[in-house]
Image 1 (cartoon, rainbow, N blue to C red):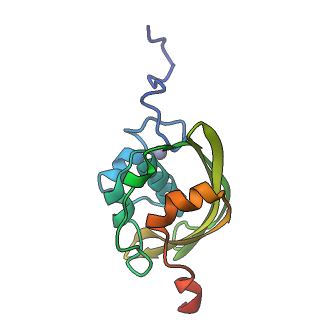
Image 2: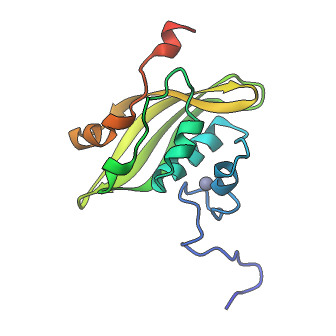
Image 3: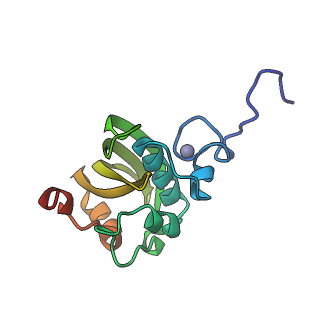
Amino acid sequence: MKLPGFKNTTDENACPCGSGKSYAKCCETYHHGTPPPTAEALMRARYSAYTMANDQYLRNTWHPGSRPEKISLKNNKNLQWTKLEILRKEKGKGKDKLGVIEFKAWYRSDDQNGYLHEVSNFVKEENTWLYFDGEVTIQSDDVVDDFKDFQPVRRRLSVEP
Ligand SMILES: [Zn+2]
């Protein structure tokens, strides 16, 4: 029974990004083409896309200058993303052209829990936020292996500002 004043959001409807909103009112709108208004919103939408193995969305929101040839999540069948934790945000809003988000993305892989700790760089082009690249600061060897098919081309942003 639904009580008045309570949100009609069950765990199954909850957005994977952990915003507390339903998927329909959160990352789904971005997955359907609405450009996320901030770097953080894009970060969350991309995390949700990873949890759903939505390669197409990852491709569409990856800057062409650093995007891998092939983005395939098929090699990651044993890897399940369980939680996103945003640790730090710099710029990435309003008239900003750059944004930095530091996060931990928790996963479960073959009954082991772990997390990927990354500082991601986002750029805004034609009013659309795009993922540029990221510096992974902590990860296990297993994760390196799981990610080998979709590593960004590193550090192009600092070489050609
Ligand atoms: Zn979301």
